[in-house]
Length: 63
Image 1 (cartoon, rainbow, N blue to C red):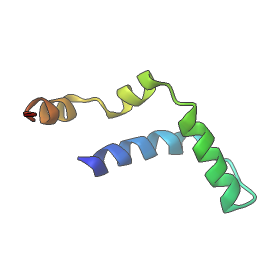
Image 2: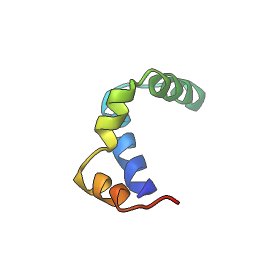
Image 3: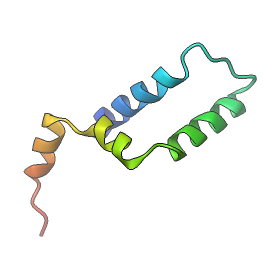
């Protein structure tokens, strides 16, 4: 499940830096860090929420 969430999140981020170029890997890392830090809670929820995700976690029983 974790890989699924990371894949969906990466796809969202990737769509925002298409056709951009960065002078160095460090600049790319800074941009990604700033982008993720500025993401709103609602955006993150919308990226990772879907029927399968909700079904999986609704079946988990916590003590």
